[in-house]
Length: 221
Picture 1 (cartoon, rainbow, N blue to C red):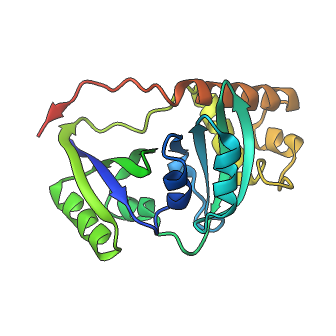
Picture 2 (cartoon, rainbow, N blue to C red):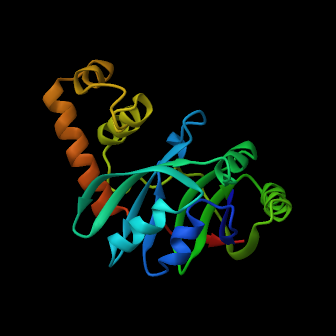
């Protein structure tokens, strides 16, 4: 059994804080936490909001991110690729160091709500201490136990997930691209057209499914 904690975190040093504070009605959800490249410090977010012009203006002035790039847009939801600046305190590496994982991270009203899976209460206490020492306001919303699970795939098949993670790792979404479609196809052992179809369908599935996750039954501590 693992401990699941739902937390509210806020700090000027957390990623995208200036942007989400300037756009409190925007729904921002961080994706691909396990795929974050520690060297490139890049990650992906899904954004749903009424005014992307205002959101993009805030991104341009946001000291926590660099090189914001729109990768896809569908039905009022955008996928961005962002780089982390040196001004950011990244919570994911600390959670990983404690033997846990970030299951979900989304913003509401300018605050980050984070769902963690950690081995025990001691690990959660260590994470709380890390937040306090880092100047991050920490509020525990909910605590319960559940069977160990991996992060929700948001409607992606295993093939689609593998394709997106490989594409991100190899720089397929970079501007300019660090790898070609043909090179990505060779890496995955499929045809060029198969890669193109997988990426398009995966992005569509991710956008469709990421904002409506069904939670499994849980048992409170």
